[in-house]
Amino acid sequence: MELGQLPQVDAASVPSDALLLDVRENDEWAAGHAEGALHIPMSEFVGRQGELTERAGEGERVYVVCRVGGRSAQVAQYLRQQGVDAVNVDGGMLAWEGAGRPLTAESDSAYVL
Image 1 (cartoon, rainbow, N blue to C red):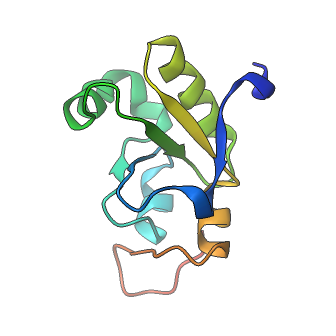
Image 2: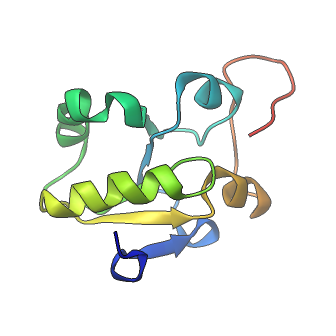
C-alpha cells in the first residue's frame, strides 16, 4: 500500500465534531479513547462495517485512528476502496494524547496508550 496516496491528518487537526473510528483492540480502547469515537477493532472490522455505515452520513469524512497509525492506515485504505471518504490520523492515539486532545477511559486506573 502506498501511504503517499492515503490522505492523512495530524491529530490536532481532527475537527471536534468529526466521526472518529477507533480500530484498536478492546484492551487499548478501555485504557483510553476519544469521547464519542466509534470503536470497531480492526480484527472485527469486516464483519462489523455496517455499524460505521449506520453512523456515517452520506459522504461524511471518517477519521480512522489506532495506536500509532499503522492499522488505521490499512482500514482507511480499505474504506477508500469501498468509496468512503476516509483519512488516517497520523501518529494515532499517541499523537492525539500528545496534542492535548481529550481522552476518557473505561476504568479509573491510570492508563497507557
